[in-house]
Length: 262
Image 1 (cartoon, one colour):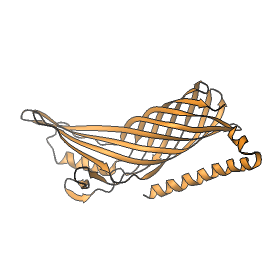
Image 2 (tube, one colour):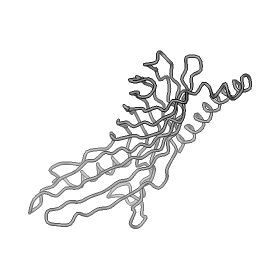
Image 3 (cartoon, one colour):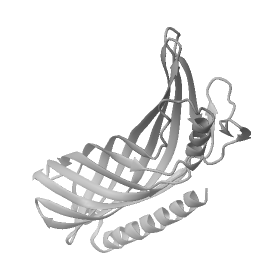
Image 4 (tube, one colour):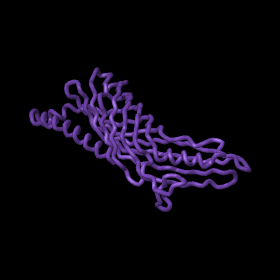
């Protein structure tokens, strides 16, 4: 929660600084001059990874493994999800050699691990599938090198995060047992990134690569069937409060399709 308030403050401060500059130009030159700076909007989609610190969930997994010494394969820890992002580049405009824009995007990433054990009639398998979902909105600052290349100095993004967890037990000759959990809240996070944008067909088609760091957390998870909370571990019935403790490094490659305004 502390990270969420810090993220919100930073984002509002930086956004205010940006739009104060735009307003000053508008006062000087008129709204028409500001709008004439707009280059394009468009859509984008990409693939990448997100690291995270699942401190609470990984403790649960450690105890799970310790309680089952006869596992033929132990459950691995979580902390590296991969998946897709889709979004809209609302606008970008050029001020001197700086490209400034605003965008929205939706990320859905997954990580899955399993544990196995030998039973009388074959192999039993426990699967945990974690789906991390987040809505992103923010501003981007890039340096215009040429019509084929921008150097992205900073993406400053607010994120709204949630998670789902599916627990499946698969046993020979028996129906699959399934449980689904979902996060109780959608806490606010923050991310910052930099990278490169290469315009294959300027300005219509470009390929963008970004690397950055995110701050976010998921505190509690609840079972969909009865609303009970995931506990600290199998030996401790206290509700878990740190399912995902923090974010980490991320990287994405994406394709942008632009709609020019002039």
